[in-house]
Length: 103
Image 1: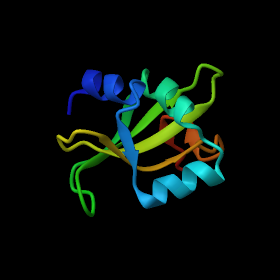
Image 2: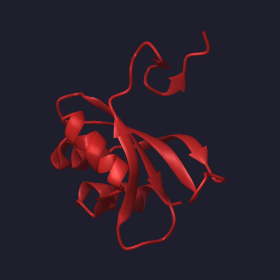
Image 3: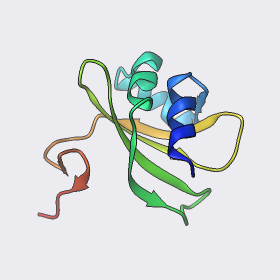
């Protein structure tokens, strides 16, 4: 996985939603523009090479307004980045939005 290309693709809007991700974006009021903003600066915080369907990873990025977003994406070579799910991380469950709290 090439994080620089992933950032470029997300920032340029070259992504598609799984059905689940589309529903989550609507119910959580996450716009495509916010995804592009956060996508331009994402970092990989968890890697799932043996995920149930396809290799994927969890990304953290911030919108221009400072809203943190987690994006789980497939990282197979494809024309569009496939977003599996997305959400604003709960600070009670994440340390600095990067590490899961253990307690």
